[in-house]
Amino acid sequence: MKPRTELFILALGLILVCPAVSRYDPNWKSLDSRPLPQWYDDAKFGIFLHWGVYSVPSYLGAWFWEEWQESHNKDIIEFMRKNYRPDFTYADFAADFTAEFYNPDQWADIFKAAGARYVVLTSKHHEGFCNWPSKVSFNWNSMDVGPKRDLVGDLAAALRKKSIHVGLYHSLFEFFHPLFLQDQANNFATQDFVRSKTLPELYELVNWYKPDVIWSDGDWMVQDTYWNSTHFLAWLYNDSPVKDTVVTNDRWGNTTTCLHGGFLTCTDRYTPKVLVKRKFENANTMDKYYWAYRRDITLSDVHTMDELTEMLITTVSCGGNLLLNVGPTKDGRIVPIFEERLRQMGQWLGVNGEAIYETKPWRYQNDTYNPYVWYTSKKSTNGTTVYALLLEWPDNDLLLQSPQTTSNTKVTLLGYNGDLKWKAKSPTGMVINIPTIPFNKMPSQWAWTFKLENLLNQ
Ligand SMILES: *[C@@H]1O[C@H](CO)[C@@H](O)[C@H](O)[C@H]1NC(C)=O
Ligand SMILES: *[C@@H]1O[C@H](CO)[C@@H](O)[C@H](O)[C@H]1NC(C)=O
Ligand SMILES: *[C@@H]1O[C@H](CO)[C@@H](O)[C@H](O)[C@H]1NC(C)=O
Ligand SMILES: *[C@@H]1O[C@H](CO)[C@@H](O)[C@H](O)[C@H]1NC(C)=O
Image (cartoon, rainbow, N blue to C red; front, side, top):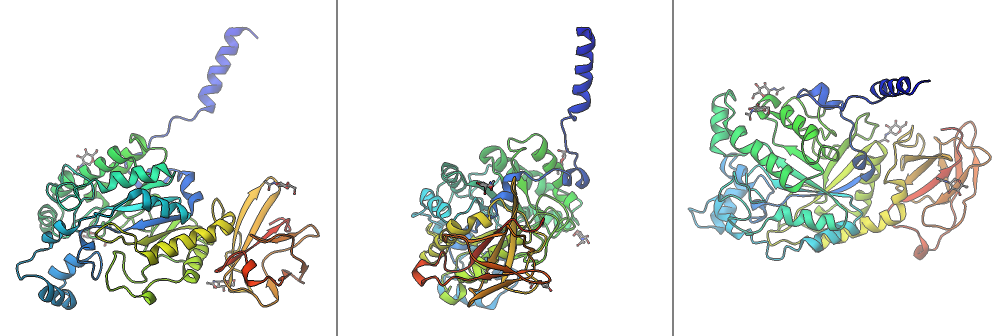
């Protein structure tokens, strides 16, 4: 072959082999075709933080302002009457959002110890207060009033030092912004609020803080076309500084949730308990009822470790990630009960993380016989390893219906030395002999992982 011909064939080959650099168009078909960056599916567990001016009254949650002024919640009206002077406004709370004990390195240390691979902070909730010095939120941001500090930037830096992915929640709408109310009065035929507030904020957040998650919310009153969502996302995926790493959720307009976007969040505390074909996230709360910290929380309002490990296991086994929310206090603390639960989650993951991180759903999610068993799996060169995660410690034998054994099947318990004895069960399944383990030698306290290798071609 003459060199010229070779070059020609090489050039032709390159044209045929290399796909055109993919650009996304501002429509859902194109945007939905973007593969989700792998880090997110591998991560499985993140922490959600709801922190804002509502953390000052710290009573009845992040909707305090709306419930007081719009829904006329009797408890809030009474609370204000009893505790504040008559002309006190919601904006007056901001000065007391002091954050004097905010130590982002200490937070990052807790989140790392919890085994979280990403953290999502409310950059701005529906009240409109920006936790960063936004140029489009004069006098209603954490640098101008309250903390006098860039809460977002300081947390992002601390998380990155610990290799935790940085995520930012952002509310598209605001309860009482005059421009939003004006657009709404025009039946959303005008987009003044979006043009001068929502979009500039999103561009600031992406360009300044380079988040790996944009967790959008506050979309539900109006279509995605009003929010210009597909245009923003096309820029985010094509040209933004995080185009290769960023993941987004599905809350981009009143017909997108649970259908379009990056991962699906569907409803708050989405817990399908069956396999979901697309990647989803269960955004759930450590406080059973509220997202923001509230001073009247009681011990029984806090999910137990049994409940939290079950939440994580059932979510991951169905293909989801768990984003577990804790609300910091107005002075910048993660209260000890939340810190303890987070550190215990990390202890549990220290032993059982192999069955959580980087796993895939198995062909069965829960055992057909034993309702306390949920499965995950991992492929390697040796075949598929199946993890049976158990929510209740069995008395003597553990009967599993779903796994099909071979003569080479090997059963171990994560955190425990040695192979476990087992027998095949006919026509399908297996019985694992549970060893007697002294209480102080138990590998974990809240749920246990049986690792099954060399099963029948599953
Ligand atoms: C929506 O995005 C497009 C493309 O970037 C832009 O031309 C248009 O002005 C945007 N609309 C608003 C309201 O910002
Ligand atoms: C979405 O919002 C628009 C504007 O408020 C409304 O006209 C439309 O009916 C809503 N659609 C759904 C499915 O809620
Ligand atoms: C578990 O598996 C059984 C049998 O396949 C099924 O009927 C049940 O709905 C599943 N889900 C839960 C949450 O138990
Ligand atoms: C595959 O099996 C061999 C022999 O049991 C083991 O040493 C090796 O770690 C396994 N590899 C993986 C990726 O699990």
